[in-house]
Length: 229
Image (cartoon, rainbow, N blue to C red; front, side, top):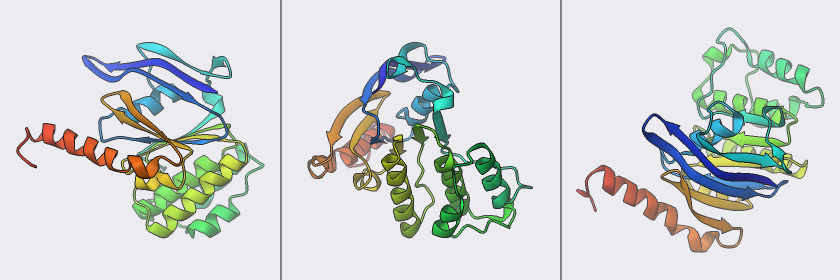
């Protein structure tokens, strides 16, 4: 079990996470839905150690969750422009020799011998996702992994994530869209204002489908001072 207990993250006077608590069973895919600014990236950065929480704790099986146990796909993917896709895959395989990049290259049709600087945003996203999934870590943090993917690549990415779950990984994946997580996740939580406001198990998604849209609507009504309906 991964336990996130009363996690609080602040940037100056801004509270990004406000006493957030989650209990995440292992060997499962956990979804997180929220608008920009809801706290999704702050949560991932706190889990991975990129930011220091103002309070709270994160444990796995009773001990502090450590960076070496995690692989993290950030929402913005940066590569050295002089490297080819093959360079990135070979480097990852060097540190994770049980991983075989060949299946990812085939499934995503990656142009591995071209410099990454020449790749489209969607191709870069697929490369970043491949490099993350190749890491043989027990915990995967995937921040908006489907942004920029076409429908075929989205379905392929979902199946590859499910394969890592079948191999024993615990996955936390975020999205703006409830629909991209329904076929993938064992549970989905709504994050709003730095807090979990709702939690759904598989089988409850149809009933819950309208609630994220209502949350987004409320957010933008506030943003535009109630001038839209």
